Amino acid sequence: MSLRTTLRRSLAAAALTSALVAAAAVAALPGSAGLGEDCARIREQAEAASVAVGVVVLDLASGERCATRAGTIFRSASLYKLLVMAEAYEQIAAGALSPGDLLDLESRHYVDVPHTDPGETVTVTVAGAIQAMIQWSDNPTAVALHELLTDAAVVGHARRLGMERTVLEPYYETTPADIALFFERLYDGTIVSARASAEMHALLRGQRIRRLLPEGLPAGVPIAHKTGSLPSWEHDAGIVEAGGGDYVIVVLTWHGGDHPAAYALIRELSALVYEGFADPQRKVESSRVPTTLVTPGPAPSPHPPAAAAAAEPTPTTRPGPAPATPTPRPAPEPRPAETQAPAPEPSPGP
Image (cartoon, rainbow, N blue to C red; front, side, top):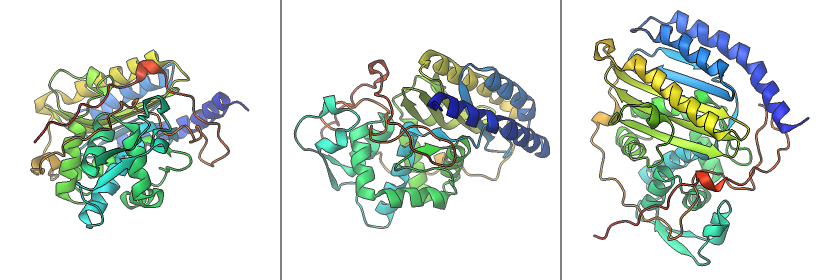
């Protein structure tokens, strides 16, 4: 059976169940100011799309949620870097790691982007590695930091957060529901600590790859988000601060190579969801105190590798997509050059 057929069957099987569960969930929750009505439009657009898509929208004030294919497994692409960041902050808080510790980038860390390997060891700080992998989706720094932290520690962090269907080595998979949970926990300030959550939120607000969800928002609307991209996958997820209330939006897609269709769908869904949250009169009272109200420490200065890294792909030794029960997977395709991100800018001097 082909990879395309396997995934389509998996998505088709999950679609009816997730749609019914999502509809029941929205109907059962008390209405805030219209997410229930907007949810029908969101699901209609998602289900009519030419690409397979999983969506979660969470009103962070009311707790109301809209979802379609929330439990479907997708390749995580660079969304795995969220967990590498979280575990790095965990180890920093425990004293096992320091932001100023040095990290050596060796040739093995350029597995995704061998053409950027400078042929010599490049040394970066842990803080610089975190910033580069989050704001520029730099791969060598992410691979090196993941290696330092260990896969077991990073996956263990996912489990502590309640992300039960997210895995890293060797499959690199997640679900829209798991990614939404990460951002909900971040907003609540419960990833490591309130201060660590605020610092991670600030890093994500400084995201430099802005071709997806931000394109569906009016200029100046704050969004803390992370993208993920592979030749057949395109994702964006984060927290939007709108006039009518803050919300989490997660859009994961499998497009089989049709990047323009995936880009357009993510932007359209972003605009559609924002429309429902734009009116300040929609805002409802919430007991939540967002991490944005906690003053973070200074953002780490980037110390990116000298060579630019292509944004997004996970290492080429990692297999491709699969159903919930892992089966042997083919290696992912090389990332198209046109979707590469620019090189991280060098850090300013003292």
